[in-house]
Figure 1 (cartoon, helix red, strand yellow):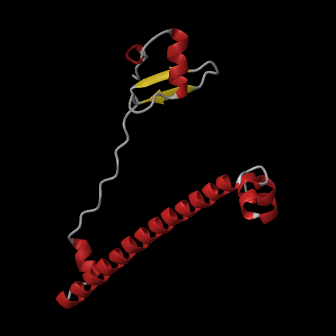
Figure 2 (tube, rainbow, N blue to C red):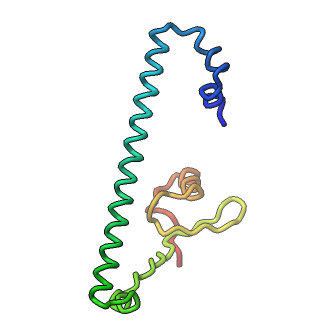
Figure 3 (cartoon, rainbow, N blue to C red):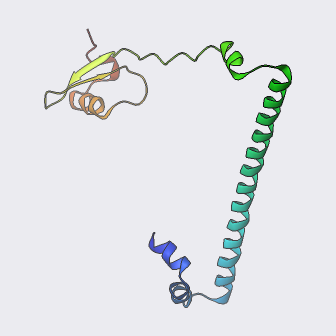
Length: 132
């Protein structure tokens, strides 16, 4: 628990910190906390509505399947499994100062080892040594 949360949840700690505040400032803090409470309640209410709608749709699908005489195994037969992601072959390979090899496909964020290598040698990504 953070010190801030401890202060907010303990009346004596809160009183101590509020001694330096004016009544107007205390009223503003209370209003802000009430606004935050309303926002949190609204988010939770929306999440509950989404879950309820999802549950109702599942029940509707189950009812339709039962009425149609279709079971889950029959339904699964018509669905093709998703293909697994293919790994991308490394395009660049370098060796760091400790002799450890690093490989990178050239996609996504530049790994730290490659960034340091390019800075040290004053080269760009296109000038990196390629994998054989």
